[in-house]
Length: 184
Image (tube, rainbow, N blue to C red; front, side, top):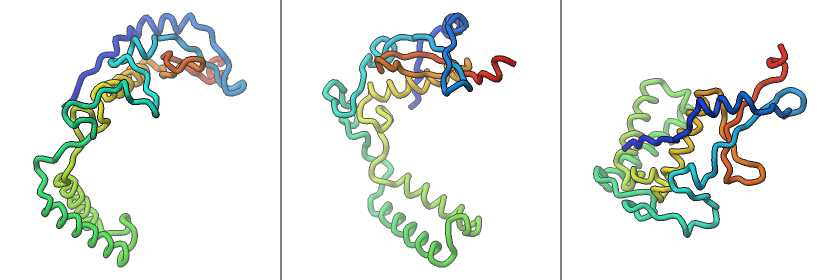
């Protein structure tokens, strides 16, 4: 299940504002950067929340997996999974002891092991919840997707994303360049 996330950022306006922003020297005399304020976590992210590792009372658990991040695999056969896993482990142990590392195995054996590992993964009893992406919270997952999209869009415009030094809830787009390149 793929979700299309929109950042709502007008990158042309950001680039225009960036062109007017003052450069600041960073990393000694070798680079300079400039930044433009995009907004806060509270106004830009889908959840409007700032997450702290020790506080999760404001995060709603996923409605599908109930916060576990995993669901029962409908294609799993526990007995079959255990058998395939045992075969995979025994075979890898044998190959490691008698041939060497994975990259020393003949290509046909590496391909067979890779196929066996994919099969083992397909039959495991639990799989990642698609609704929350394994995070355990749909809103936290949507925020992760938002940040990925934001960084991707910024990169397409030659920019990067950073947070405020004084307030980590502030989100900035930045541009950096080598001073040697800028002067030349």
